[in-house]
Structures are given as C-alpha cells and as structure tokens.
Amino acid sequence: MPVSVPALLCAGSIVADVNIQGLPRFPVPGHEFTPATDVWHQAPARLLLGGTAGNSAVAYAALIGACDLAGPVGADAMGDLLAAAFARRAVRLIGPRGGATATHTIAIGHDGRRQGYYFPGESLDTDAVLRAWPGGNLLLTGIPLVMPRPRVAQLRALAARAHAGGGRVALDLGQASGDLWRLDELDDLREALDLLIGNAHEVELLLGAPYELARDGLRSAYEGPVVVKRGRDGATLDLDAHTPPADVPAARVNAVNPVGAGDAFDAGLLAAWCSGRTLLDAVRFACAVGAASVASPEGPQGVTRRAVDELLQE
Image (tube, rainbow, N blue to C red; front, side):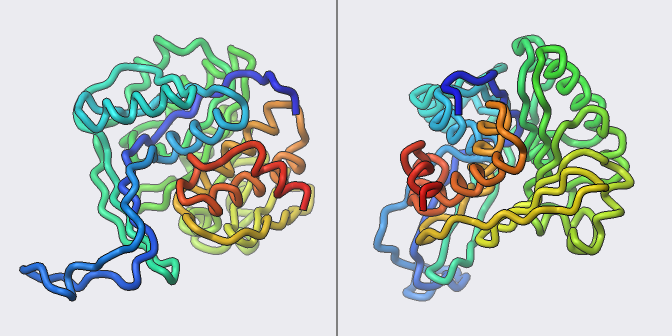
C-alpha cells in the first residue's frame, strides 16, 4: 500500500467511551450498594476515544498517518480530553465545539454480553463542516446518532463536496437503532454514494430480513457496491446486482474488546480502497484491521500497522 493516500474525513458520531471489561456478571438493580448491585472487576476502567467516526478516524490515522474528523465534541472537560487525545493521534477535528460531549459507558461480561448507558450529546453541524473542509474521501458513519431527520439534503451536500475534491463517499449504516435508515433515503442518496457498509444486524433491520434473502430489496434502492460486516465470520462483498457476492473470512484472534471493531474495519477498508486496491483486497485488509482491534484491550486505539501485517501473513 502506498504511504501517501488522499485525505479522509470521518464524519458522524464522536463519543467518550468509559470501557469496563471482564465482568463476571452484571449488577442487579437496587436502591443501596450491596454485593448484588456492586460488581467488582479486576482490570481498571478505561476512558477511550469513541463513537463510530471517532473510532474509524483513530484507526485510519494509525494505518495511514493522519485523518480528519467531523462530529459533535462538547465545550466541556470531557471534550477537552477528547480533543487533546485526538490531536496526539494525528486526528484533526473539523468544525467548532459546543454543548456537552456524548458519553457511552460500556460494560463487557466474560461471556461477551454488553450493558451500556448512552448520553447522545449534540448534533453534527454540516454547514460548519462545509465551510472548513475542501473535499476528498469521506466516510459517513453513525449519522442517525448525530443528525435528526430530514438529513438527506445535508448528506448530499457533503458528498458533493467530497466528489468535487476528487474523493469517494462511503456510508456506514451503523449503529443499530430504531431511527436507523429507510430505503427511500438510500434511494435519494444513490448518486451521492460510492460504497454502502453495514453489519449484518443493521442490514437486517433495514431490510426486514437477512441480506442474502432481501438483497433484491436493497438493490432496488442502491445499485453500488455493498459490504456486509459479519464479525467473527468476516464480511461479504456485493459489487453489483450482476456479480455473485463474495465472502471474505475473518482473521482468528483472541477476542479481548469487541467494541469499535466494525469502525476499525471501516478504517482499514477506506485505507486500502483509497490507496488503489480493489474492493475485494480492501475487504481482506479490513478484516485484518477489525481483528487487530478485537485483540487489543483498547479496541480501535490499539490498532497498529504491524499487528495488521502480522495477521495478513498468517
């Protein structure tokens, strides 16, 4: 992969993650602190850079050397911590700060189950992004978390700026929520997007059935390349309606922290694809990046090019 690639802007959700790992069980709700309500954990809680866009930007910068990031970062102490940490990792924030920073407290049990508490923070100021960003490659991710409806016109404006700067536009559906996406919105965005990404659960929420059973429904709204992330089962690349989908296996690692692995996958996908690799090769590279994230206690912040290269050589 060339060392120098066109710049990438990750736009969407930015969150301060309070990450707790290795819980033997989850607490039982109660009014007082008791052995049932208060669960001890052996490893300290970690304050991590988070959010779908934040995770992808950090992993992309680790792979390529730098990344731009646009999303809500509050004008508060938590926002100060995020801004300083992003800067240390060669991630440049685009747009102003204001309001309160989004936070997500995530507890992960020994069996892989999760429990979370989410404060959404502010909305993405697309006008400010357009004033500050000259264009180039663009990853839109976690948009339903930071941009209320109607949002199609704003996304089309961002995509037009990206294309005017010679870039490509990828949209990740995530993350799953009741306000995810509608097919009519993707239909309105079909000319704006060069790639659509989503994990299998998100795609099923959108289509009402697993992708392999409802592929034609999506193809009626969007004709371009689609990547379906399948976690430990790898990913599926569907180039177009006339080409059979191709499955790409995941790299096998000891799973430590699954949070943000799909965002790291996106970073690897864009890093390889924007460097001139085919989409199939880019998906293979992305699977290794996602695995490197899962294998690190720090998730996407633990991704290194060395770790990815070692996984690709296995």
